[in-house]
Amino acid sequence: MLTPDVTSDASSLVATAVAQAFALFAAVYIAADVSGGHVNPAVTFSFAIGGQIAIPTAILYWVSQLLGSTLACVLLRLASAGQAVPTTKIATEMTGFGGAIVEGVITFVLVYTVYVAAPETRAAGGRSGVSAVGQLAVGLVAGACVLAAGSLTGASMNPARSFGPAIVSRDFKNHGIYWIGPLLGAGVAALVHQNLVFPLPSVSLGDNNSV
Image (cartoon, rainbow, N blue to C red):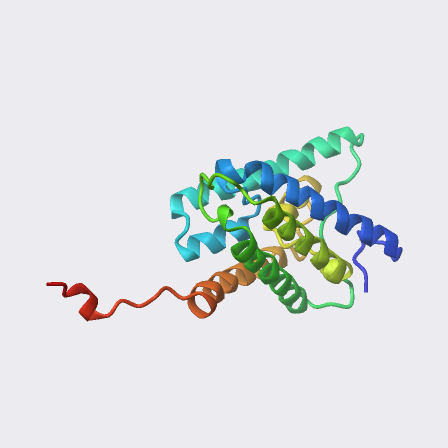
């Protein structure tokens, strides 16, 4: 099953996965110390749920991410002499529900990797000594998700990634999938990481009764 934007040539899918992996690694690494290097509304949403970023700041991040994606697609269209910008689409054999599930699962994997491998992205301002290895892990996981699901949904994992092309191409068919799936997956990643895997230690009443 292939989307209209992905060929059946395996080498094309591999090239796309490798390109996305290293592009994400570079983008996140460059911006991690400045803004956390989210570049993805789903990541920002996850950190807002987890309390690592304030809601007003998250909204500003969302606006910046969507605007950046749109401007990039406008530039791409101008540079390609007005050719259509490809949009993410689900395979013809898939339902919208199935597409949202796939996007949710791969976004969960990506965002959970961010929590574990690149904790400096959790808050604006980042921290000194950003780990290149952690950022590379995030990029490689994104590339692996593209290999796994690229032929099913385009493996967006990023609402902004799908929003820009949809705006420029004026093609919003099944566009909701690329918001519902990633946001749900990112939200579950935050809840699992902070409540099941690494829950905050509880404070007993006796701890507050120091003499």
